[in-house]
Length: 110
Length: 114
Image 1 (spheres, rainbow over the protein chains, first blue to last red):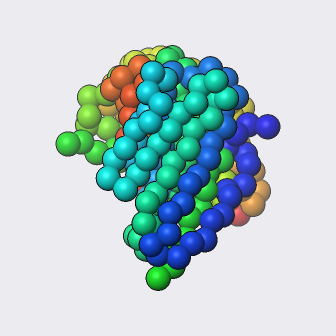
Image 2 (image 1 turned 90 degrees about the vertical axis):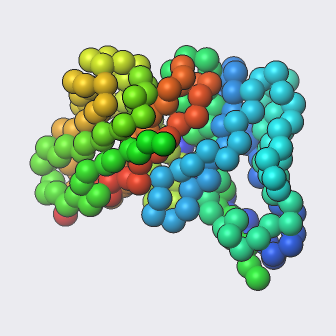
C-alpha cells in the first residue's frame, strides 16, 4: 500500500516520560525528514537527517537513521504537554519526490 | 521569512463538480507540491513541480489536474468531485532538490463534497 494510506498510530504518555517513534521506509533514501503537525495546521520540519548521519539532535529531540535496515526513529526526552501533535517521517531519494510515512499521533498528558 | 498561502481554506462542492485549489508562495522556491491528507491518515503526494510550467505526477494523480504557470503559484483541480469525499489538501514548497531539502507547508484547504 502507499505509505500515507495507512492509519495513524497512536501513543499516549505522561508528561516527563521519554518516547520513541519509529519509521521504516521501503526504497533507497538520501535523507529522512521528521515533521510535526499541530491540529488544523500544516506539517513543520523538526529534524532532517541525511544518509551519512547516524544520529541528529535538536534540543529534546533525537533522530537516528539506519540505512542498512531502512529505518529511522525520533525520540523525545522528558515529553511536555506541548509535544502533543502528529509526527511524520518522510523520505527523499535525491530527486524531487518526497514521500510521507503514515505518522504517529502523540498525546502527552499532565 | 516566507509564507505559503492556500485558498480557499474551506471548499464545499457537489458530486461531479470541478473544483480548483490555489497555492501561492513568496519564498522564491523552485519546487512545489500538492499532498492529500485524509482524516486519521498520512500525506499522499498528488502532483509536484520542479519549475515553472513543469508538472510531475505523484502516487495519487488520477482524478486531479495541476497547473504551474508562474514560479510562485501552483494550482490543483479536482476534475470530478466524489460524493461524501472529505480531505485536506496541503501545498508545500522547497528550495532544494526536493528530497534533500525542507518542505514548507501551507495551512491546508479542506474539501467537503455533498
